[in-house]
Image (cartoon, rainbow, N blue to C red; front, side, top):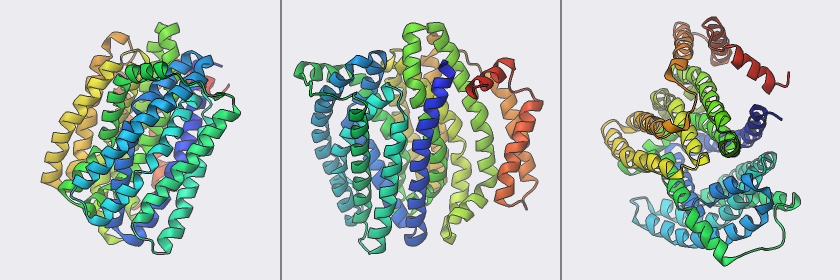
Length: 474
C-alpha cells in the first residue's frame, strides 16, 4: 500500500474515532448548555481543561516516544508496554498530587473545586489507555481506537443523562469523565492483548529509567502542548469567570471539531513520517509538504464559511438567548484553525525527524508568549479577545515551527496558498451577499462554490489530481 493511502486510511480511522467522540461530546455539551446554562458549561470546560493538561503531564511524553520507537521496531512492543506502563504509573502518582494542590490554589467556587478533586481519579485510567494506545498507533491499527472512542463517548453521554437528570449536581460531571476513560482504557488494553502486542510482563527497571530519560524532550513538548491547548480556558476562567468561559466554550466546541480532525491527521501521519525520515529522506520532505498544502486547501474555506455563518450556527445549536454573544467569538476562532494545523503538523514533523528539542522550544515559546497575549486580550475584550489571542498564538507557533524545520527540506511554500485563499474569499463573499439562505442551503452551496472556484483557479495540479485518484484506489 502506498504511503499516501496508508496515511489516508489511518486518518480515516482516527477521524472516525475522534469524530464520533466529538459528536457525542458535543451532544453532551449541548445537553448541559441548553439545560443548565453558560455557568455549568463553564464548569465543564474547566474540568476538561484540567484533565487534558494533567493527563498529558502524567504521561511524561512516553506515549509519543513509544509510538515512534515501536513504529520502527514492531517486535519491541511488549517490552515498551510494560516498562512504559511502570514508568508512566510512577509519574502519574506524582501528578495526581500536583493537580490536587493546584486546584486548592485556584479562585474557583467550592463545588468546582470538589468536582476537580474527584476528577483526579481519572489520571491512572488514562495511563493504561495512553500506553496501550501508543502500541496501536505504532502498528497503525487505528480502527481499534475507533471502538474505544465510541464506547467511551456513548458511556459518558448515557451517564450524563442519568446522573444530571437525577439532580446529582456538578460532581456528576467528574463521574462522567471517569466512567468514559475507564471504558476506553479497558477497550484499548483488551485490543492490544488480542492482537498480541502485549504478552507476558517484561518489566526492567533499567529500561524504564531509560525511557524516562529519553522522553524528557517529549514530556516538555507534551506538557507545553497540553497547556497550549487549554491555556485559553484557564486564563479566561480566572480573568472573566465561569459564565464568560461558558460563552467562549460554546464557540470553541464547534472549532474543536476541526481541531480534532487535524489531530487525527497529524497522529496518523506521525508513524509514517518517522519511518520515511529514517528510510527515505527525500520522500519525507515531499510527503510533509503535500500534506501541509492539502490541509490549507481544505481549512481556508471552512474558516471563511464559519466567519460568515457564525450567527446562524450558534442560533441553531444553542437555544438560550445569552449564547448569541458566542457568534462573534466563533467568527474569530475560525481563523485559528489553519495556523493550528500548520503549527501542529510541523511540530510533529520535527519530532519524526529526531528534532524533539526544537519542537519543545517552539511550543514552550508559544505558551510563554501566549500567556501574556491571552491574559492581555482577555482582560481588555473578554471572550472575543481570548479568541483573537488564540489566533495570534497559533500564527506565532506556525512561524516558529516553520523556521525550525527549514533544514528538513519540506516541499511547501506560501505561493501555493494564494489560489486557495482567493477561492475561499470569493465563496465567503457570495455567501455574505445571500443572508436569507438557511444554514442547510448555505453549507452545501458554500462547498460547491469553493470547489468551482478552486477548479477555475487551478488550485490542484496534475500531480495533485493523480494523488487523489490514488487515495480513492482508482
